[in-house]
Image (cartoon, rainbow, N blue to C red; front, side):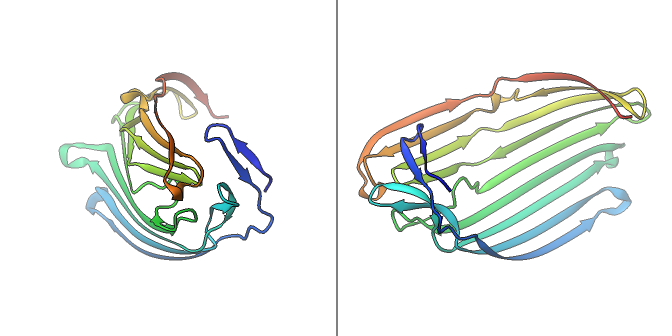
Length: 234
């Protein structure tokens, strides 16, 4: 790794020729149940990871940082996927999938010595996917949405908290002229324009000293986009 400078954070990222690869032990327990009459399914997965030589930012000198190994990390994930068909209301070609991921993890921060989450991890992540293939037609439509909770990022002189609004990833409608030719319309980023906020605290020197230089607040939105496409398979 070579040194680089981050102009947004006003920090220098030093290289590290002694970087060791992470070693991970992973333990997984899963459960799956399929409902009668092809009515859907339920899947559960519990995953635990014990990580050695976790890679993140380390202290270089007194108030600079670079990529390095910060010791061990632990991660617990719980994944739930529930899929159901709407045959019970007479619409068996409509499928709704709800997914949820819980992520609990912990490392020791190399700058403060305190326990914290791993960089940019999200405690809760919700996803919804709905698709309806209209019976006896070549038409289908659907929606995909997701919601993440906060993310944290910490460096030698930086603490950043990101909060994300509910994201309507996209809605779509498609029509199959033949088995090989399909027209699709998709609209994305329409709900809240996928808004997110960044609260960033910049410290004067090492974050462990607690001397705040400035606080920044940023708000980002994604402009909605619309795509009409014609797809063919040869």
